[in-house]
Image (cartoon, rainbow, N blue to C red; front, top):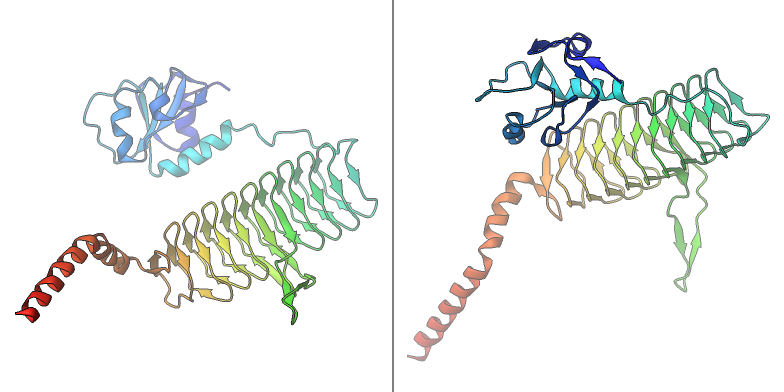
Length: 345
């Protein structure tokens, strides 16, 4: 792809400073910029690279004031992250595949396939499944019986959507993710032996949801496991049976959510967080990475951290005390010896 700095500035609605006719062929990280590349500066920690990058053009904030001369052409935009997202989408060729059904795909005669749908090699679409217009399904995907998929979805290779699950419009599911696997339900008898509890519910996924690779979302025991509109899940996340994740909540990799937990709207959950079952997390809660959430969070907008997780500010104060414990123990031992000496006297 070849495009001029002027054309990119027009596409992004940005202000141009420098050579408008310079040819740009690819995006790059600012510290790895090469001639012909366009990069961006959004984090001040990387500003030093701006003055020595070999990239031909750089996206910067409208209000950015350089402290030294810059060789690259600048394109000033109000929202650098938003601009780079649009730009990468323009450069990204993934998904531009022919809208056909590969002859090696196994598609049930009772399945309903919309217009402009792509179905890749060795994909299986079972009885009574429905796939909406414009959806792209890559190779080796499994679509179970009675699955409903909306319009303009994209499923990467190896995705498995089990029976009866429902997925909305504009969803993206990355490779090897499983939606609708059995929930972890077992009942012990008097001898301590476990019998499987049938998991006969499903998974409901709203619109504009993106789910990373190797994530697992269990079907409900009864009813539905629910992922609401706009949720973004990273790779390697486990969502237990009957969990509800509210609108526009985001979760980083390796989060584990036990069954029947209810997560509010617009929450931010850091990597490797563990969330106990049957608890409720209020809207706009932020949970720091590697935290363990044992009980419900009732106040919206709460920031918590630690294991067990507590208020973030309280955790920082506690951690200061924790670091001092070895010295405090030494002082305590000295005091104990002094008390023993005084008693002896």
